[in-house]
Length: 426
Image (cartoon, rainbow, N blue to C red; front, side, top):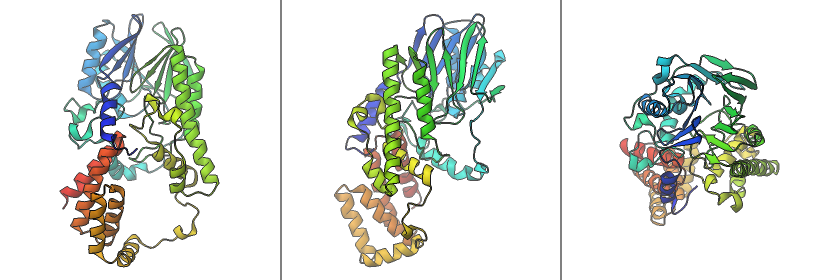
């Protein structure tokens, strides 16, 4: 979301959303660890051992987690549960291998697209931009839902260990070292997501299906379509447990049955509203851009502190839903066989009075703080002539300006990373 105070809003959010804290959820039994890594971890002390849920993002940070556990018990970690396969939740696992733990995960509820590895280079590049891996701390501020990952802070490397037990079932009930827990499939941001429910204590670990800001219903780095309807159903499932404690994989835990129910219900209803309104607009034959302009989050949800657009955004969510349901074609036959970008750009520049006229218009747009218009005009020049250095300088300036307005850490990173790439290649 672009706002005049976007940069400051992101800073304010990052100062309060994930303080370094070890919360004793159930005295002597269940603990929640936040702010020691990009992601959170939880641990449960059993009769003779510890059950660990996620392991932080690097080995260095996992060593700190190991020390925290040791400060509460001398029992070894004999069970690790991965809530999903994102590396920031698995990267510390190698630190705990001295106790030979069982490592539990769920298989994806639907397969990854075949030949996805053919896109490894471009997806990695886009991921680096989204997460701001090549930005300074000042430029990046944070990673939206947590402190910056350890590997960009010189705080270790990923030490992933594959799971030893992978379930394909919808639900598993186990007793592990005297602790009864339920593992259930909970697809949402990922298709291999699981939840962990401790019925005796009314504690629910929800992984990535709730965190305290607008979620990545679509990731700008690129990914398979995230089935938002299924995500809503998973939130219904989370609400149904009537938990007294909600321990997310990012941001702060929610304490108290009323607070958990209210937070999850608002989170669920806000996402469901965007899905329904997007589909309604699509069914009225609106283009993607028209639906984005029409669908806004009502103030009753937009004003909630845990639905701020600091990670995903509503607009990106609408675009993701649109593309996920109908693909690239917006229904306008003009777009079935468009002119090649270079030819369209050349014709457009001629109509606009030539290159110098367009450069002048870009300069005026930047002076008038119309950064989006400036970069769109710059793209016309770059499409016609990829060697136009002044257009690239102007585009970089426009991207930097937009980055300062963007509340989403992901969006800010992408703007700034691409600006730096443009300037470094002049």
